[in-house]
Length: 391
Image (cartoon, rainbow, N blue to C red; front, side):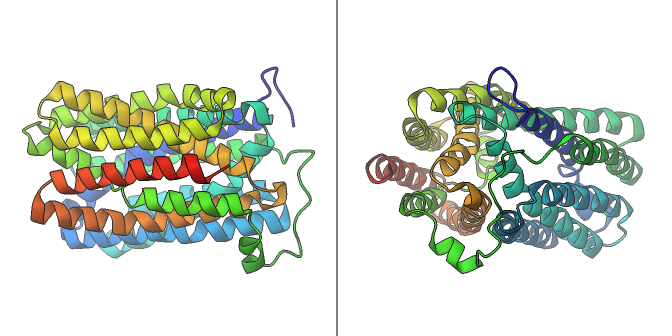
């Protein structure tokens, strides 16, 4: 590991830049896809839901398989490069799409790329940082990723102002997004290195045996995380809630920007705090903070209240995205980190769909108070279960 003085290797910074450029590219495209599909390609909202639902499901299913093969072969960089490369190439297909099913295929392929790269990339980050700063390393990566999510929409907004809010403008932005996407791929190919002291590949490891032999503590954490995920529904519900109380589209965009800024600023401090005080109090605190956010959204009525809640939500996501990964690495064997991360991501991703469906159904029948309050209660139970049941 090529280390810096703070114990964080160069791979972490390079992969942070890779995620930054990838998110610049993705966030230039994906906020415009709903408009492109419905207004340019003429598809209905049910088609849009089909595209996004299939895309997210594919990503979740692929992650556990990719994590397993990265452990089995010991070649994490190759899978990371393949994943980023596939996601970049298919963005060209989105720009050239003339039918809604073209977007469905390309969006699905883009998510396959994400599924291929995520677990091996996170395992590379773990191998490129000292255990004492592992949380900070994941926080650094998430911060750089989120900065890309801030810059991407700003660039897209500027290009729309120049090329117009129509088909020509959309296709121009989709093509322009290829530039940061391929910069990211180049960084992986040229600068990312397999750690010198990488764990030996588990060549004889069979898939189901590998899952069965993950530590009991990991399995307990996975069960509690699945419980929590039943409360962790789509971010879109918080946006809908803000709109329901009279906050307009322009102000909601500002709230989204505030959320991303809070997420970026909190990522390194959340990871560093877990290095100092331990992962358990930070993860349990994040679950409890999410409960507070849900209760807050149930009763908030003004823009300032929502601004505070979006800030708190950004802090929660920063901790959840970085510290949970560090904890999984802490409790997993070195040559099973890929499948441990992949299984976690697959399980949590699979839970998001029913969580959002149930929340939407309860919202439609009983209003926002019931699903938001129920989510808060589940989050508090999950926090207590994690504190008392995990090591």
